[in-house]
Figure 1 (cartoon, rainbow, N blue to C red):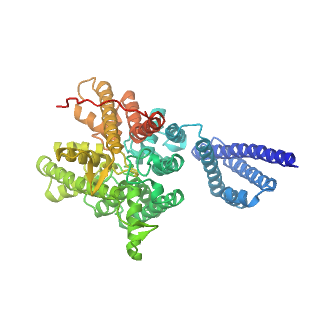
Figure 2 (figure 1 turned 60 degrees about the horizontal axis):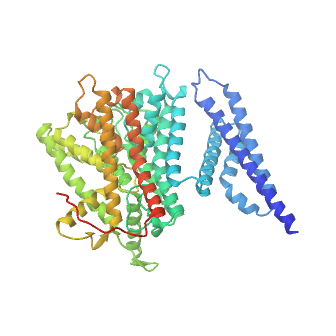
Figure 3 (figure 1 turned 90 degrees about the vertical axis):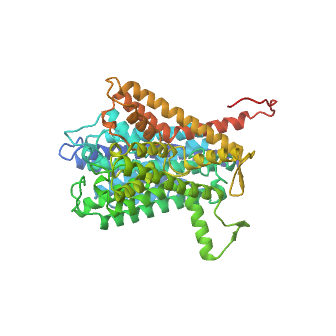
Length: 587
């Protein structure tokens, strides 16, 4: 009897695996069919629209049949099977019932493609056969490859301005890594299909880093310290598991992100003028206006810096929306979800008049205090320096210098600009280089070495000057491991920036006309995933463009993945002995 039951279980498992593979193939086929219709202009389709519609609907029906067969054969626990496939069942049900509507069929196909790809990803991660660092970097590479292919479809660009492989890779890498550097104007050189692809890659690229970080935190354990680090930046006071469960974390991130983006969309929609210098065409049309508001809201919160205008936000330099809508969204996006979660926890506790939860005091943790304090100091000192450069060197009126300083010091993480960096004073540009290198906060969508890393190094310097043997702040001691990792990250980023600058200096200055300033500015902007440029990006040679692509990718993923890999190796090879110490000279 036991042998029969064991045989039946093995047979069910084999059948289930076969159905999973079949559903994956069907989903991918449906996705390809949708792209064959959407990826070519309507006046020159590669596949007749009606035929594509029929094939996609038939594939969705086949997918539904496979799901129902699996439900029927899952005699052991059909309720668990249905709960696990509720998203698939809902998507195919709508797709089958409304098969006469092409948009519904296309969306249903897209949903089942995404669901199956995510399941493949989770299966690989949970198997443990692929190192987490490799999985993290590889997922970005695959995502960029898919986006590049979509941008190269004829429908993504105007007929008179097709895109080549290198430019498509550059654009989609910049979008995925929330950089904003472009080799062609986003608004003019892409169709609405291309804009949507870029927008989706900005959103998923930004959230993907955070969600992958949370996933790795759960898989690798709290000892790996991925609350705002390793996968994202630097270790903080405790792991994410110490504040929120993984499920609550994901829900919090998704809700906060989309709630704030919706608020931004609504505010921009009712507040933007119908036209301004560099405005995208058709702002009088409600649908066009809504799309551009969506694009700017998502790009702002994700710190991407992409814009559908011809001159970023220079045409709205003194308009209140740039300073009271765009700026706050960039700040919230760059401040980090660990900080937002802690602030929300404390706010709720104050409303409920609670001081203790689960035996722990509800308070602002050290991570939040350091980040808020350092961010405030950066804003004040950096803003004052930019103001001085604009007022004295660029000869700007005082009120415009104040507005520029407010906007540019915040946008060190996003790349939007209200004034061309070439028109700024030398001091202002120098300050921007430093601010771009620092970047945003751990656990955020921003790049750079991160505010926490910068703060830890400053605190270490201060503690050394004061003769302390440890790094201390707010009545707490920062572990030496954190100090070492901060130093490591700074050195890696400096090496990366100088390497990119060296490549650009060799490839872009052959005629002797290119000066060092725009090259350094470009290298720091790319490696810090900022997006500011002194105008040399569209004129880069193929070698220079490849160097910037690598810089954007490594700046977003490389140092973090490198540290994660070093930490995992260190735990496995940690020595159980120590050598005698000996003094060395450092000055």
